Length: 414
Image 1 (cartoon, rainbow, N blue to C red):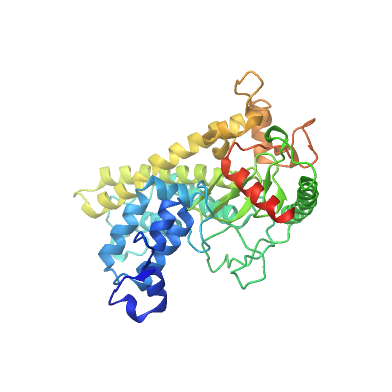
Image 2 (cartoon, rainbow, N blue to C red):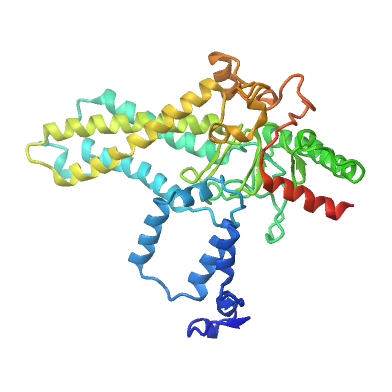
């Protein structure tokens, strides 16, 4: 292979390796793109920006961030819905800090502009202040604190991560690897607390791993047909329960996987889904109180406040997408189905009867569906009478990649 003579790469060994070309003049990143290995592509792109390409200006980096935010391909990768694991540390932190800064800024703006706190000259004689709207202020304060509380719990609650104590081969830290991707002072990423959920996940993982070893051993003498194969995750080395999915960002299988949300900085699954939904609802209520106060403030102001108008308009824009998300997840809860299942229903055979008609076996009526999502337990991913129902085994994903992984595993066993 030949090396692309770059003045920047010639002084750095990583740069030389990244700039190497094969006989078809393709770099490692070109090969990753050709083979559709999105995780490898993102990792190589980051290294190229660090070692090969000249450092970008601030405006160039902001432009790249904006393009990524507008890219459906990037969002599918960030939400863990691609076919490849996202490299460790590659989940974007910008949406998370953008969301938290928006909530913080909304509270500060409300207190300083609409109430007048912190402004000595405005406390007396400013008719635009909403001192007479005590009920509105209490509503906003309660919703604001509820939003922060729900965000904290959705971030820190174990979503149902199987094999949470496994350490990645390139991770020197032997502690558990959390699904959360944004590290805060109060959320230091040291893993999930050893609460009831985590203890249950440890027990379920051990049982699923024992079944995985038994099945792999049985494949050496009797390889079943595609219809009778038990779905396996060779990365986590477990039998995959119903409704679970290997999150490509958390790099773990998650029970009742919904999606990985970069705005809350973690994977949303069985046990933190309720906090995610309450976060959406409380955020909408907070925005509703903010917009109401903003409209009253604008009507009372004697002169048109340009700064307050622009800032309030920016804050109000968030209500539309979050309200849509809240409505969307309300429909999901009422039908007891996850985002992943709704988007990829064709991949899961337990949603289709023998006649090819869609049938949700977990739909128990609106009231029971809501209760099960609010207070989840093992019945959320187990079916009575289903094959190997004691751990909810039986999910079948119609994906050729799983077949390739099984064949590769068998070649190492036999």
